[in-house]
Length: 321
Ligand code: NAP
Image (cartoon, rainbow, N blue to C red; front, side, top):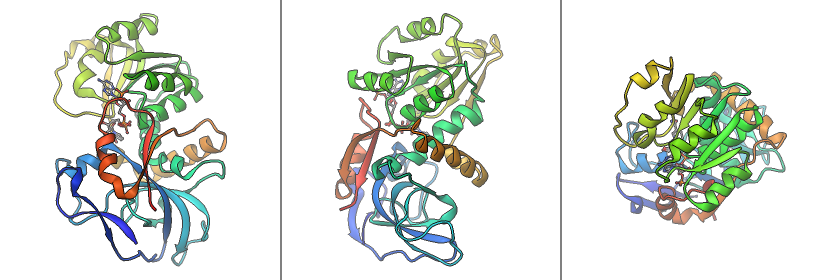
């Protein structure tokens, strides 16, 4: 099969399309014929070699994909060849025509959900769910600021928060990104490139502040986030690309909390529980992944440039030929 392989850490041009052996399923495993692969910012951090988790070289990137079950190993009773599925992490990488998966991390993809949408489920939606409900303990009627709402995690968070009855304020920088955030359920949309957007955000929460802030770029925003928290408010750091200065007095006076999360830390039980909720959301159509760009697998390098650019619009996915 064709797969993208990385033989050395570096820029996007280290992503090479190569021929590799087809995977074969062992006990409790399945092989998925991939129809779409999710591209996440973390794929670029890992590729660059600057990330805490470094795979052994060479490796095939990617954790998210959707497609059909091609073959199943012994003991697999939950899926059969031909079933439509998406996966949450694989044993072989997802920038490929096929992936070897632990069956516990494969979930059914409802018929009305496209493969591209299925490839947008795991990292974006599981992260948004875990940040909102496990870490921040968000509840209906809370106010939430989704700081960076136009990308994969942000759109997922907007849909999840709105379906759970929160008052949702989201931010984006491009006009089409802002329109998308509003269309997907935010009550109010602000521009995080605008100099006074923190004042606007506070006004949008009636001056009381936010019970929950999901922060996609903590190194830029965390210090000022603390000043727009409500009493007992919680910031969850989801994305961060550098150091940041805070004034601890801002959380002290509010009995506030700075929380953080990495999806890698989710336990198998948490992932089972999260994906049960996500599949239900796909079935009842409260979750509708938005695909901004489909790029051929062979052009993975272009996707790695695009995912780091400003002006996010939902997800970027790769399509194997
Ligand atoms: P994405 O699709 O590339 O979206 C990036 C988002 O960040 C866009 O909404 C973008 O808005 C926004 N952004 C840009 N500048 C911003 C600013 N100054 N303030 C607030 N937001 C800003 O990425 P993603 O998949 O949603 O992931 C978002 C971040 O979370 C990334 O850093 C990613 O690495 C991280 N992440 C962490 C975990 C975890 O387990 N902790 C899991 C998944 C993702 P515009 O483009 O409209 O400006």
